[in-house]
Image (cartoon, rainbow, N blue to C red):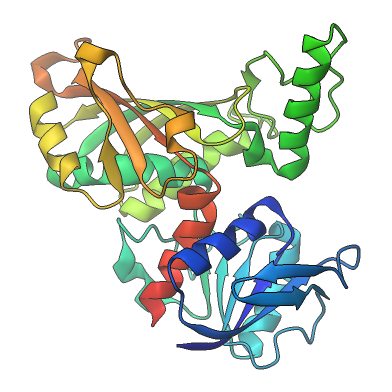
Length: 333
């Protein structure tokens, strides 16, 4: 059992999910310290079993802590995670701060749990879209190496935080009332719209989200040669990301073989009923721990039966963030 667990970013969209995940999984911890900015300090929230007061994050916040979940952005993690480690805590960090650090394991428990053993105080939680892809792709890749993966994402507004979700809701009401949608969080209106992911585009033409999917998947799989071609989009959905995936394998793999593998894979639920036209949706995935997989079919553009397509959907606040982090911590015990 952990003695004292710190939650950094406790009032954010992901921070709030930690409470439900820890409570539902009956996480073994004696006490919690909830940390946020000065703006939230002093607020009282119900956490697990009682009312607790939010404290302002500072250099001395981690005294007595043996575990710290960070979900407050990369700059906060870079500044305070080393201090938490120095105080004796193991950090599970949900930001991008340490993901590509060669000395920090990047972990999806269903894929590479053994990597946790190499940690030096910090373990990185992958990007949400990477986690959702990896949970569905890894079981197939382990049996029959994926040579190339083309993935298009349809990412929910709440993946950009609580303010982005509120913007989608307010814009939707405004448009239905006959008013213009005024973007503030996103660069363009999100209500009734689809647009390229709102992360910065680099000189190679890939935005940050797409680059994360490429580099993080290679690190998690331990396969620097796997070719990944992502296109990341925002859609007017409140919660849960959907991904369309096309895979070229080294050897032939039929849809029936893939289904049989995925049906036995941890963290995966098959939702694939062609006769009823029932496949994964973000509404069904919202609030669920599993990644839903369906529309499993041959990619007929790839010769020799080596191509496969499917869609997968996962709750980016749960499996894509808080749940994956808690699963990592459970492996530490």
